[in-house]
Amino acid sequence: MSFEKTPGWLDWYAGPSRPAFELPAGAVDAHCHVFGPGAAFPYAPERKYTPCDASKEQLFALRDHLGFTRNVVVQATCHGADNRAMVDALRASGGRARGVATVRPEVTDAELRELHEAGVRGVRFNFVKRLVDAAPPQDLLDVAERIAPLGWHAVVYFEAADLAELRDFLLSIPVPVVVDHMGRPDVTRDPDGPGFRAFLDLMRARDDIWCKVTCPERLSVDGPPALDGERHAYRDVVPFARRVVEEFPDRVLWGTDWPHPNLTDHMPDDGLLVDFVPHIAPTAELQHKLLVANPARLYWPDAD
Ligand SMILES: O=C(O)c1cc(C(=O)O)oc(=O)c1
Image (cartoon, rainbow, N blue to C red):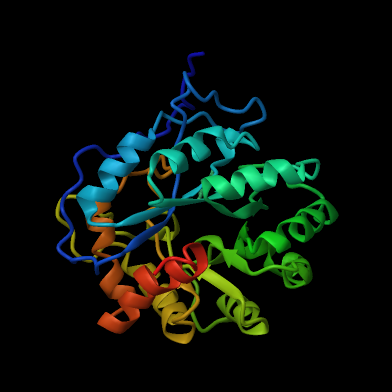
């Protein structure tokens, strides 16, 4: 099957630079995706965008180029609940990738076990309206009950404006919760103001809520973008991410978000994106927790 990508959609950046920041040994890119290729793994009929292809081989090449050891491949919404492309990447990784799946309430226990055996350790609940038609909360809670015995967690993606409405639901999820992209704060606001305080309060409400301090390229309003050798990209996002890293050093994760779905303004150089890390995690200890120890605890708890 051949697909035509959504107009205005930018392809991922080929030939990224090597980061100036040297990643610690064992670093995990804890948020990235594969797209298709569409000819082998067709995009879902219910998708809200059609991406360019971004294969597992290209993901693994980026991992090696940037200096990561492992990946967490998160099911992208363009594949709906068809996890085959993501699972194919996990199986090809030789144990160097774990996954987060999207499942429907009717998923069988045998299917969940098969996903587990492939390396899946979580499910994704998405509330971003431009990406999905959100499932009824009770369906999601039923799924969460089903995955609890497997030791999985729920990855949730929502907009800051929807947090007040979602808060009680999020707090009722009976497994650990990982919030994508800091709950998408409005970085033109004060990081000490009510909007981001509501997010930090959510993190404080349970000690098993984690946060991905990811996607500065999506959240930034005044850049400058991680392009053309820029060493201080996305400065407006730094106070938000750093706040989370410093208050919750043992519950933060970082990832590239490659291949950066739905960017229409600019496409970051992933090498320069890695150089964002020391701005938000300024000490070697914080960097090690963020990039190595935390993702290892969540995704490879049995590894030595
Ligand atoms: O903000 C986005 O557009 C976005 C989309 C997806 C997805 O389509 O799965 O995943 C992300 O992490 C971010």
